[in-house]
Image 1: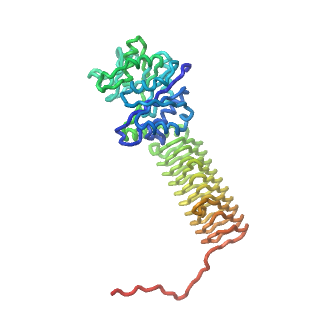
Image 2: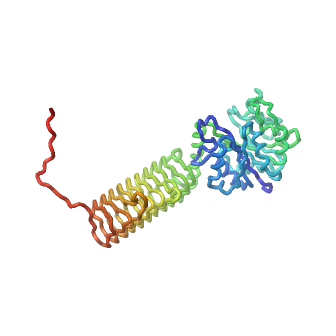
Image 3: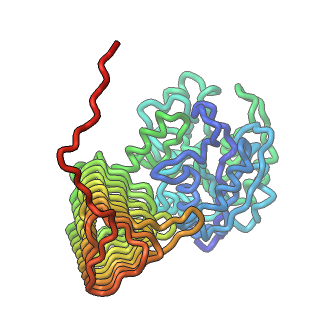
Length: 472
């Protein structure tokens, strides 16, 4: 649009029905705060700024906005405080000093997370920078919502007013077209209309919706952009509603993935709590959770009940069931054709090369494994550099922490580590060497050597266990 867009986000409510100390707009949907979804949508519209109206938990909400990533991270954000909270019109009055008269004010709700940018673009087109435009919806049960009163029947009839449910007559309550809480209005007009608000109504509040009757009285056109997708304007007022909307959100994520060619074991049993990108011929079994930034290369297979966060998994890798991968800030890399799990755990900084095998109950943290390295059973690799084709035995660990500092273990190419070994870092196991099972290695070993460090075996023939003394 040629006219600048200033987004105002209503985020002052306490959310009593959430029964939580956390401000309502900070409850999570798809792994992100409700408010973050709304701010991302504003950023997609290339808004000049977003003004977030805060009230309950204002300091917490404002701090959270500063931490929000994604598209919202590039959005200019300002804050207005509504204290006390005297209605939506009163809230807008607090934001008004931050809104230049040359723009269009787009009003959104911080607890309505699934509105799409395309819908808002259509609403702004109806506004054209010249008139009041409302986003509306027909609902089978409109109880609790403001009704859109038109001059006559049909969606083309002129909008005359919005009447809140508590103030509506029986005839008005029979209307099924409701106001969503989202509007676009030229700021220069909004300023005058807000100055005329009063609180002479059933709730003794200043209703933003009263500006509709002022626009009509002033001879201004009021238009409505009516949609059919109720989820786009669904708000969150309780944990039940949040859970319902979460499933809507996740099913939409699943549908988008399937449309790209991803095969899902069951679309209803997938949770994407961040950004998941997939190559061709990816398969994901049931009950998998993806968090943060995750990429799955071509032909990747993910087994059931996996949790994967902040990881890049290359083409042809197989993640067997019940694997937990969490890259946090350092990330996790899994190379082409690698086999991970079942019941494996990859922690931040795990960098696995092509064809690496990490088996059941193996944990890898801040370690690099080169092509073809294997740790197939019950092992720990922390702060280690592992060369190509290394075979790391069951029950073996790198003892990387001395109680104060972390130290690194280097295992060069073609090394064989026997079962139940302890490699006390800092230590280097030379190329092609072998460490005998049960050894505790505290010094560097030469290339090609067999290194054994364990107590000498002693057997006492004809030894008898102690017998219990008779009772009494």
